[in-house]
Amino acid sequence: MAYLQPVRGTHDLLPDDLRAQRFVQDTAAAIALRYGFEEMTPPVFEFTDVFQRTLGDTSDIVTKEMYTFDDRGGDSITLRPEFTAGIARAFMSNGLQQSVPVKFFARGPVFRYERPQKGRLRQFHQVDVEILGVPGPQADIEVIAVGAHLLLELGVADDVTLEINTLGDTESRQTYRETLVEYLTAHKSKLSEDSLKRLEKNPLRIFDSKNEGDREVMAEAPLLQEYLNDHSRTFFDDVLQGLADVGVETNINPQLVRGLDYYSHTAFEFVTTTLGSQGAVLAGGRYDGLMEQMGGRAMPGIGWAAGVERLAMMVGDAAPTKRPVAIVPVGAPAAREAMKIAQTLREDGYHVDLGYSGNMGKRMKRADKVNAIASVILGDDELAKNVATVRDMLSGEQAEVPLSDLREHLAKYR
RNA sequence: GUGGCUGUAGCUCAGUUGGUUAGAGCAUCGGCUUGUGGUGCCGAGGGUCGGGGGUUCAAAUCCCCUCAGCCACCCCA
Image (tube, rainbow, N blue to C red):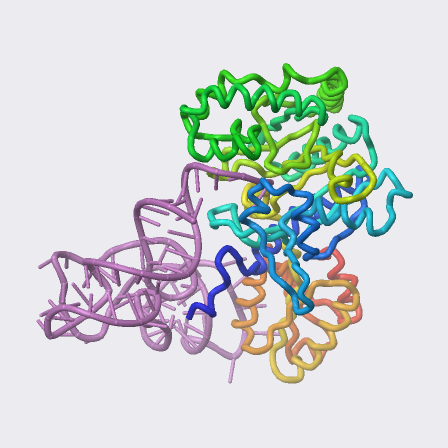
């Protein structure tokens, strides 16, 4: 029995689900295109190092969520848990330093070994946007603007707010980190067990904690804002100003910290309260340190990823399907003719439904069920006169149409 | 990974303190209706009661294990 059900956290995307997801993905691709992004797609799996070295040894994704296995050649392989690292690798593999700035859009499945919940799966899908090679805040502004535009286009903008923060440059972060650790060490006794671990590995993340004791401590904690150097300060101000200029509302959240280690400067999250405890629908940030960490030349980058399933859930019933024209033959001779008519109409670009069996009543029912916009009825009477009866499925009006005029007559149902 | 709730037909759910052949609505299929769909009437098919083990004369119902979904945590898309 167990093998007849999909692996935990994976799902079959039946037509209705897939249609909703396609709608999200295609909308994202179309919007990104307007901003000059071009679609590309990195492999679904990479050498484990690609993710291990970039995501950082302290991130949960690396420590407990990767689908990693040895292939038959003995290489350690990992199913991508996100797009950014793979795209950065592709950038270097293909020598795209020459083509900077590079703006990529990508979409596809990603894999994370987590405990599933609604809106949280082991195989899920993301759409992703990256700008590589632009050190200035224009890139941050543009990247966030595409995200906001996408959410608007999907009709979910009202249920989402943009939280934004800066992590500063390396220098600012280091100074701050020392101050923060000092403060936290002094309040160790109030911190949760989880946070004590974080104190060692990634103290910034304690800001994320929902534990009450942690929150009390963090409410008084020194904020990174106060330790930003001039460069970082100006950078963030420029981003905020730019977003205001293009009409994107921001909500500065000094406690917003992203889980991945390679971020610097801008970090942001579009969050919603409509998906239970899965708040983030579209999130990302700047990762100027990434390429160097991977062993390449330093190269700035910024991007985001959005969860397709989460967005699809928010969108609800998506794009209606194309309504077909149904062919309804009555009797064997008509069935042959019906095939021919269906074929020519299909070649002509019509969506045509042709049932495989049944009397006229059955076939009309079927036409109704597939939501046909019109039915082309073809029986002995019609054959004798070389015509078809075309029934408008909404009004019920019927018209006798010479077969030679059929394509023309159906044009209004395209 | 931690804690909790749930699991009966394709879907939504009944099923009394354990007690014969486990029910309903919707959906499906057939008929009323061999040239007319959406409403109507009649009928049929469809269930290892998530799976395994145990208690009992008897288990959908009680116990244990397991799987999955959901909720919270963790983390994030």
